[in-house]
Amino acid sequence: MFEDILHTDTFVLLTAILFITGILTTKFSSRIGVPALVLFMVVGMVMGSDILGIIYFDNASTAQLIGVFALIIILFEGGLQTKWSTLRPVILPSLSLATIGVILTSGIVALAAKMILDLGWLEAILFGAIVGSTDAAAVFAVLKGQNINERVGRTLEAESGSNDPMAVFLTVAMIELITMPDANALTLVGSFFVQMGVALIVGFLFGKLAVAALNRINLDSSGLYPIFAIAFALLTYGITAFLNGSGLLAVYVLAIIIGNAEIAYRHSIFRFSEGFAWMMQILMFVILGLLVFPSELFTWTIFSKGILISAILMLIARPIAVFASTIKMNYTNKELLFLSWAGLKGAVPIVLATFPMLAHIENSQLIFNVVFFVVMTSCLIQGTTITYLAEKLGLTGPQKTTPMHSLELISLGKADAEMIEYEIETDSAIVGKSLQDIPFPDGSLVNAIIREDQLITPTGNTIIYAGDFLYILTSRKSKNQLKQLLQEKNKNSQLDEERMNLSNSV
Image (cartoon, rainbow, N blue to C red; front, side):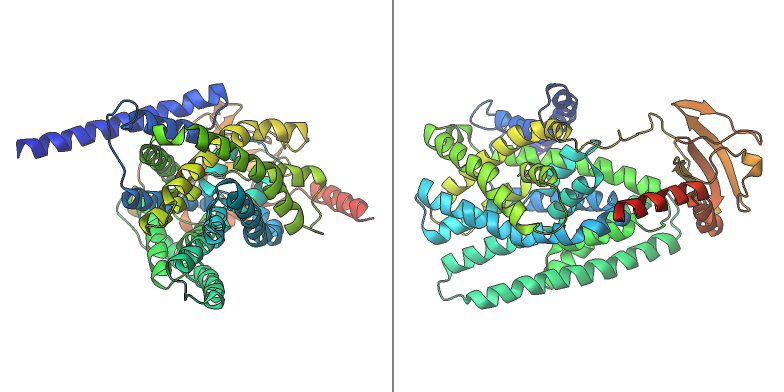
């Protein structure tokens, strides 16, 4: 019994050390310009049996379970942050990149793997399928807080959030063809469209259900609402997978619907999901780092062949896929060049690389080691230069403003009211007006204004300026009316925008 307690205490201690190390790593990574994902994996490799020998871990099944769970949380948080207004214009190119682009990338890499790794054709195609998709965890982590051009950034985020079904389908299909030679290829192709359709339907329906539940069920504590939202993400994945659909795509659709709806305790749900996603990223990449053995990874064979495949993937396969799958979609050559370079690889390829290991496919360990090496080089080379390239290509937008302040609120419980945080834009109709001249709905009160990181105590004579952050206490029945007031645009700004659109069309 004492040994069991000691084992439990050791596990808790190691978990704490890993999380603290991972969190401190994020600060360190920003200073040296290396994505935190790489350092998380390095922490895992250092802690593993080959270097410090603190933790011995070689369970691919457990790593796969943790990886899938983490991806659900990461995709859910990414979907919450996606605005439908910016996503809608890039749906077509994103879906084209997520399907045609993945197929082209996988095919070219498969040809390279056949020649370089001396694999059979089916194994080579399996390798190409594993590394063919752009990873959502890596993209969301690298682009978070960056001022990348909105259209290009949203295209990349939407592609990475929706291309996992194609990568998973190709990987599973090739494993079935390898392990079951009598498998029908046409049936496998049909199952892909079924997976996509089921995912879209279930994600949409459960998104609407989640919004209704979050707004209508009055929980006793505001802290329960974020957990309630996360539970819907897990439920959506589970039911979609049970129906043979793509659970990850369904979660992404669910999160987009929730993130673009008016929900109770929105601020709490977003902040909790962001913190939880960071925690799962740390856990997932550390575990994936533990799974690899540096003595097997950093050999001349893996290094030389991995570098060659990485170069073909980054410089040939991805650019061909991007340019071919976005023909006549009004992207400039600079935008396509950036999209080509920003096809980051991350957790999904490593998690998919555990599938052949669990299926006991020949050369599965070689495939896993080379995939891990390709992911490391992608994060190190592409991840560290993505912002620099955007600046050189002139694809950086206005610097994103993140308020350097916080407002901690006590749960309002059954008071049927909540605090709204709203940033005033330059074309807002209330810019230049005093609070007493603004027709706020009944039950709404401006409690605080943050201007240039300074707290302004509001009075009736306080003038509203662009860039102000307003904290407004409002009743839920007045929330929609308040939102309409805050989003009303200045008529002169609208006329200027219409003239600009007219001149551009001419």
